[in-house]
Length: 322
Ligand code: PLP
Image 1 (tube, rainbow, N blue to C red):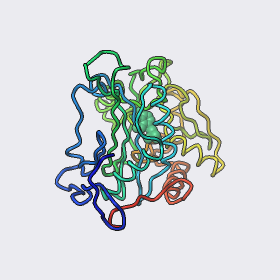
Image 2: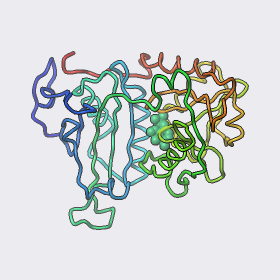
Image 3: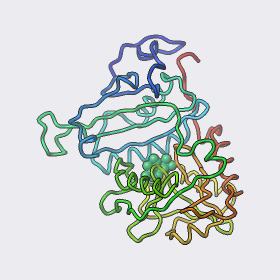
């Protein structure tokens, strides 16, 4: 981290603290690439990077709400787990990665931010095809918080279509390594748009429901929650819903969910760092339950957002002018 430093407020910050936020560019934000903090519009990587050429990368997305990171430890666990499984290494430990993420948010000035930490395979100095020769590239960026569902969709529930596209199987790509293999999810989205829906769910190799572009899914039936247990990313928001079930005394299970089970649910919702707990009130043009946002969903949404202030689940960001 060789940076020119400047004193801003009471702390030494990288020099660009004086020039950000860069509001001329949308989304405005700050990145850390190749050891340097920079504005988001200047953050670039080589076209020879295997992360770009082969999707050979892992990443994690955390968020900041009201100036506090939410469950950053869980995101770091998943990110470092992915690095190990992909045999990648970075010259920073957990504490340093957390600090870089905090600094990007602090510099961006965003009180509500979407913060991505990424490691790509990088490329080798000789352009060798041997991944062991590659120099892994580490980066972080912080931009304004974004949601899968907009305000109107959060209030009335999303309209979802189930596509017949199959999620890349766990035997090919381990879904516990958060990855950019999204061609199946994007095909699912186009299927959904053709059916007049707003987003998609795609299937596992057995034809059951897997997940959607950037989210997990839950059903509620007779007060019990279920979510697919196979062929999905173990989402941090999904884990948070499990924890909230513990707090509220709801039973939950990770198990196979067929299309029929999904359509017959009392309530359906999706979960993602990008938006939290988001209601679904229509699947394949058919109303779920009575067609309104369910009461269990509403209760879980409320606890989810309340918990963003809880010191066990969140930590404050330091901003240059605070
Ligand atoms: N499934 C996929 C494929 C994702 O990309 C994501 C998040 O980006 C999720 C599920 C939800 O995970 P999380 O709750 O950790 O955001």
